[in-house]
Image (cartoon, rainbow, N blue to C red):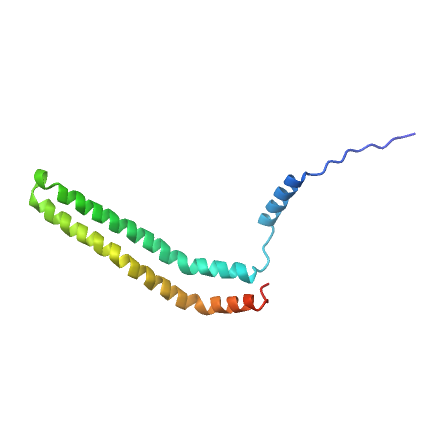
Length: 131
């Protein structure tokens, strides 16, 4: 009598979860849900304003610091560097103060641009038509 023998091994629960996650990552995406689209739009509105604020804030603080360094070098280099330091410091302070208003202007402009679509999606989600 001939005997048939085979061995079966199934992935563990952890392996199955990892395999499914990889499969989702590589499978073609269907149309994104309304909540996912809403999150993407919110990010699209806020990200440019935030990046601009960070860059201008860092630049303003660095200019302020450079101005402070130049003003402290009065004994070694004379009053010309003191005046230059004050000017550079004031420019740094001005850039830092203007940063808030620039951030708000960019954010408001992008809210105006994408606001209608965001409101439509939020209405759709709140009324239960989200997918």
